Length: 162
Image 1 (tube, rainbow, N blue to C red):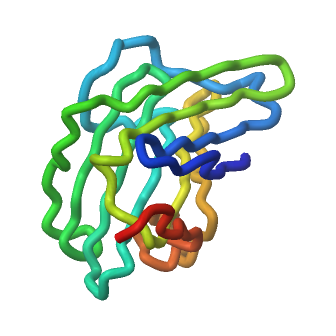
Image 2 (image 1 turned 180 degrees about the vertical axis):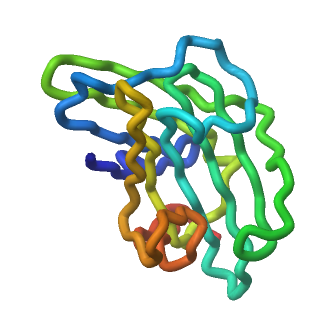
């Protein structure tokens, strides 16, 4: 598994997840664009962002190969959850081959937290037989917890004037 921010422009945040050896990968069926909860129950890709503004608030973006998505804001670690306004939907594309699978997502920059920000890139991968694995830049607890601020190990710098 590899995940990275491909580009950050005035208009888009583009992110890619790559899975090597996807022969047993389970992909949710195409559902068309739209907001949906519970995407993490099967293969799902996630981006967490925490602005470096001295607060503990952060945002979570769940992106599914089904083209469904979710966006949430939290006031503290796993507290104060609310739906993040996201009028322009993200654009998600899943491509699979025999050696690798690639999931690309483009999220409208105007609807995202403003860098500088700490980020966490993670994924829930379901394989045949209901086998699930949890991927993140870093795990700091016995059980995977993508919301743990210690998992926000990546960073985005400001790319335009404040």
